[in-house]
Length: 337
Ligand code: A2P
Image (cartoon, rainbow, N blue to C red; front, side):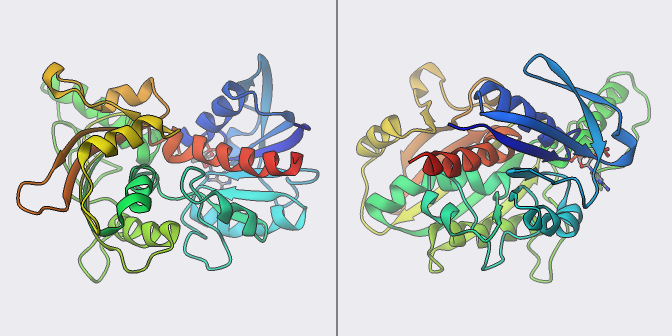
């Protein structure tokens, strides 16, 4: 692979830092790495391949000679700066929700719809973290048996909200254990020792924005508007890793044994399903494994084409940074052919 110039926008954030790590771990062919953040971080240093790289302030002129710009500084920054990157000749891979539902912008998970990545007009969107792990698990079932209905409930870690939320959970936990008053800034309620059935704002239909993202994005990635999908998203006092309880109804009946065989062979999936030895995916395992972990696979008792499962993945890595880097790898790989 020829080397390319990469910019990471939001390099000092929870996902941005992970992007830098993933580029290094995967030996991504980086010629020059440009780290961009707000003015307050300018002058800070981050490590990449043993070298210290200085963080610069993001401006509309930050993208000269950049081949790939990985954005993760929130949707308003993406809306303001992505077109400057594209005009400068970069391909933008955007981790925010700014362009995900734009018809001109492909929404890509390399294990699911790699072909869509090649239809871009300069911007490719990275789906929401809870959608990515869901569709990776759904895809082989969809291809083999068709999917009519999905009911998903999420148990999402605080790192999905960003660094401030990680600090808030830690501080509240310490305060409660020390019988002190808790401080609350990021979430509408205490998050330590609690579960919040609200992620993001409520929409007029009484679903949250996070739940609607899962619904719309799943249909777009799977190219199927007829899938009946409903979601409930909850925030749990876990640092890293989102967990999902998923119920599926397939078109054709699918037996669990053959589904396990399929999952065992799928790149990007790790089957962790040995209930007799209490083995199933755990949120803390997502700090070790990059794969989407699937377990608790079982046939539903009431509906003959119903399947239940438990899905876990690292929200900062497969749910964000890793998926973005994989999209860049996909495009680079094709340039090589
Ligand atoms: P900074 O650290 O300088 O504020 P997180 O989601 O973990 O909170 O991270 C958000 C990322 O987006 C950080 O890298 C943050 O940089 C960056 N960011 C926030 N606002 C801006 C801005 N106005 N311009 C450039 N980067 C920004």
